[in-house]
Every structure is written in C-alpha cells, then in structure tokens.
Length: 238
Image (cartoon, rainbow, N blue to C red; front, side, top):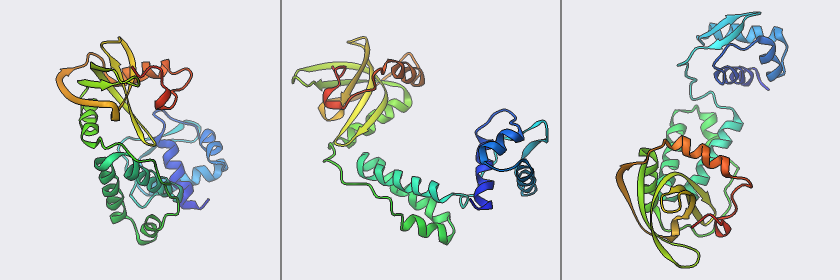
C-alpha cells in the first residue's frame, strides 16, 4: 500500500465513524504502527482535513469534509466502472443512460492516469438474457418509490389470472431477464413480489402510503428467511 492509499484509507476509516475512535483502533484497522498513525494524522491535519482529537483521547473527522475526485484507489475505480457497466446493460434505458453519464462526469475531472484506468478497465459484464421492454413502467415505479406513493396495477400471475392491485412499492430487484417489485399489497395484506413483465398496466396515485419506505424495507428484510428465490419460483408473488 502506498502512502497516498494509506492516507485515503485513514480518511475513510474516520469518515465511517460518528464518535471519536482511538488511535490504537485505527492503527489496528489499517495494519500500521501507532507512530505511523500519529504521523499520518498530522499530515492530514496539515493538509486541511478537519480531524479533531489527540493521543489518548481519540480522533473524529468533522462533517462536511470532501475528498477531491482524484482520491480514488484502483479498486474503487474498478468497482465504479464495473457497477456502472452492469447498470448500463441491465437496468433499462433510463438508468443505463444515467450510468454512462455518471462515468463521463467522473472521467472529466480525473487526472489523466486515472482517466486512462476508467477508459481501459478490464472488468467486464457478461452478456445477459433479453431484458423486459418495460422501461416506461419502471420509471413510473421508481418515481412512486421515491415519493412513497401507492400504485395501481393490473397484474397477470403465474397461472395467467389477472387481478387489480393497490400496492405500496418500496424496492426493485434486478435479475438477469427479470425485474421484481417488492411491495405491500393491500388486497393480500402482506408483502408480495411482482414481476414487471407481468404488469399489464400501472398508474401512480396521489395517495402516499402510510409508512416510510425505509420501515417497509426493514420489515420485509425481516421476513426473508430463507432469502428470496429466483423470480419464477417465488411463492409470494401473488
């Protein structure tokens, strides 16, 4: 690990914490000596990082400190490019275009050597099964999730039966060849999963659902024992 990478990891370790952390804990996490840690803390403070604290008391990074874009490690850049490429291929036209724009914006502010790493990243996303042509519906559902609005669906289940549902969508899962909405279904009075390619029509209502999506997401996670299966076999779809 280079010194620049070590300083970056130290900043990140401080950024993850809301309360003072001891020098011994930081040194152990980074795999360095206390002497090296104290020297690195002093270097960052001299460079303008708002690190409060002292030896024997603990250290805390004040909120609001922004790292310059060039402070990416090679692993972080590879993760960024791989994730953006996956989204570009598998998350629909709208999110795919956003992923391409994101990479272009980041690349524009990187120094030349890091820009070269983005342009020539060697972690590739393999071919996927054909994606559903549901980009318009997906955009509506994403907007409903962001604004915590109920949606009305006309849905055809595995047996070919059509039902009308009012649901509270709070998450979308992306599988190869399928996208799954996790939602609370008013008709079933429980959590249900809906494949977007089986939605015959969808409309976003003006009604907010009565719980925050974060609370719904937590309760849904608590019900996942065992973890959710592939969308074709999920017994809680309907």
